[in-house]
Length: 93
Image 1 (tube, rainbow, N blue to C red):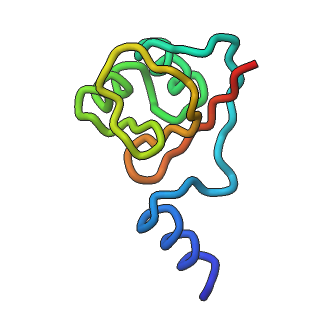
Image 2 (cartoon, rainbow, N blue to C red):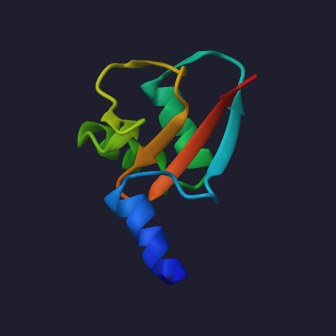
Image 3 (spheres, rainbow, N blue to C red):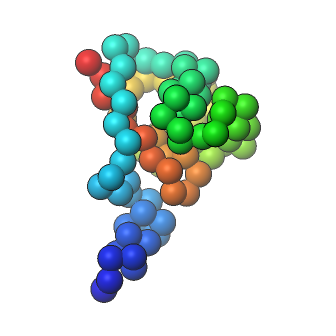
């Protein structure tokens, strides 16, 4: 199996994060949705905050493969998936 096929199988079919995921450190153990959207915009995962708000409204921002519905996010699990192919790992300091 070539590298592209392995990446496709891991990230799109099994919905697991790739090895080259972006990592961000935060100081708090919880975030609200607006803070998460700000982080997504600063790390260039989304083009701007309004795109991030649109993605949240469409329920395509996931925390450990579960869509984020509530406004407050506890960071016990730390890998976010945005859409199908973009990932962000948040580490609490």
